[in-house]
Amino acid sequence: MQLTGEPIIPAARPTPRFLADARQVVANPELYADRPLLRRLAWAALMAERRNMVDQDCLAAMPVDRA
Image (cartoon, rainbow, N blue to C red):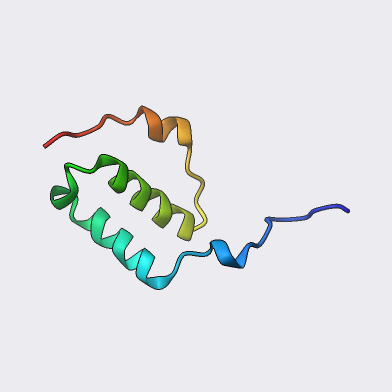
């Protein structure tokens, strides 16, 4: 069986509430400065929503801001 295009996994699609929460985190980084992993995951979720690729190596190399 040959696969063409991206696999579609309906259960893996984030809910509107999840995306709204991710937008809240990204829009207010000062409120979540003590949770850098949450901020990165929110950013990655929003990038995925736009169907942009997230380079995990680049993401891991980003400096971690501390409050």
